[in-house]
Length: 259
Image 1 (spheres, one colour):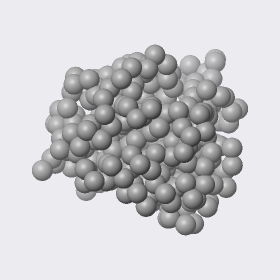
Image 2 (cartoon, rainbow, N blue to C red):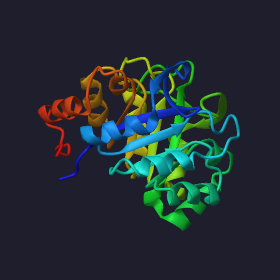
Image 3 (cartoon, rainbow, N blue to C red):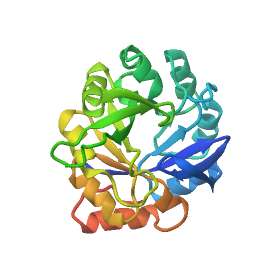
Image 4 (cartoon, rainbow, N blue to C red):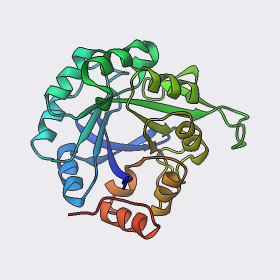
C-alpha cells in the first residue's frame, strides 16, 4: 500500500521557526530543534526545514541546524534555503539531512538539478516551487501560475507547470509546491495548482500553503498530492499530527500508523 505523508514544515529565520501570511507578517513559532523533536514524537512522516531568508540574504546554508536536528529526530528530514551548489548540498547531507530542497538557485541555473541528481541520486533532490496565480487566470480550467524566487520576492516569468515538468526531467525526485496566494491563510490548498502539477509530473508532489482545517489535507491528497506540508495548524496547537492522520484514515486515505 502506498501511504500518503503528513509533513510538518518549519520555516526558519535567524535560528527561530516563524510563520507568516502570504510570505509576509512573520511571527515567531519556537525553537526549530525542539519543534522537530516534538513532531517526531507525534508521528510525523518527515520534516522539512526551509531557511526562508538564506537566498535573499546570501547566507550560508543551515548545516548546523541539520546536525542538531539529526541528533534529536529519527524521521527523514529535508533542508532548503541557500543551497546553490553540490558543495552546499554535500555539507547539509553530511550533517544529517536526508534530502536537500532547491528553489532560487535552480531557477537561475537549472543545470544544478542535473548535478545534484548525478552526485546524490534523485531521491535526495527536492525542487521547491513558490507559485503565484497570474492575474486573469482564476478559472480553474485555464489557470496559470508563475514561479517566484528569492523567498517569493521576485517573479521569474516561468510557468509553474512547465518548470515542474522540466525540473522532474532534470533529476528532481520530488516537487515541493507552495501556493503563495494561500500560504498562511488557512483557506485550504490551491487544488487547481496541485492537480495541474501532479498531472504534469511522474514524481511525488508535496502540496504546501493554506492548510487550516484537517479536511484541507484530504482535499489536497485527493487532488493528486503525495504528501501535505503543514505549518500553522501544528505550530500553534490547533491540531496534532495524530489528529491529522486520524482524519485522513477516517476519510479512507492510507497513512502510516503512529507507533
